[in-house]
Image 1 (cartoon, rainbow, N blue to C red):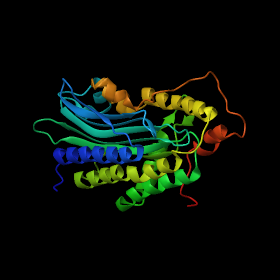
Image 2 (image 1 turned 90 degrees about the vertical axis):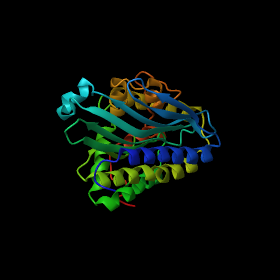
Image 3 (image 1 turned 60 degrees about the vertical axis):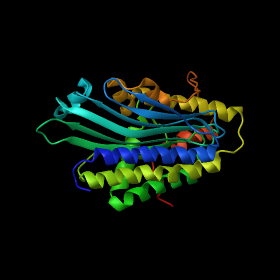
Length: 305
């Protein structure tokens, strides 16, 4: 592989990643994903896969998209003036899994590639992505496993990579208006190109390939735990934080809507049921209170492991 960006290789990898993740989740749940292939008038398209009302997964979506356009939106060129006057392509796999069981955490993952081109000029390109975990009733061993897997994916690329992208994830998945994290973090990276194409692509693959190893053991362990109406109602309440983040802060959601993306696929990440309650507060020393007190504050999950 040369260091020239290879769009075809990236696309083939992303399509295969979508297949592998859907196959593994289908095996666990017992119900398959419905597929909806779509095209975009401005250029490109994708295939959206959704699993709804499964035995384990209440709603899960694993989307592939490859969109293109002749010009970037003004909101993008205002921050990246070097993109003005260039056509662009953006491709990626994005997924969100909302389990039925409140003891099983929601997970999100995304890996993506962006390239902007203009005749007579070198392309502008980068990779981005990561994954994060959003528990409702958290278990330390799950958090440790999640972060240990993330670190193992990063380690071949340098000892500084996991701490950097773990910290970036903590900072990114933060609801400023609530003053709290969305979950227990993981990895987040963007604008990755300083390593050159080959190494950057290899890192994106390492992140994408490690998602199932990070999430499936947790889901397998928690999916059948007994729960009641109290736990269900707290799960629905905390899902509200997920919705707030995606609609207010999430870069992928905002980029998709600003570039005329497919709304159904962009908003696939939202949970099927959610509730908000005015000024609700958990009981002191309850399992619900421990989520925000003990788990959501950013911390080094591998310090004692």
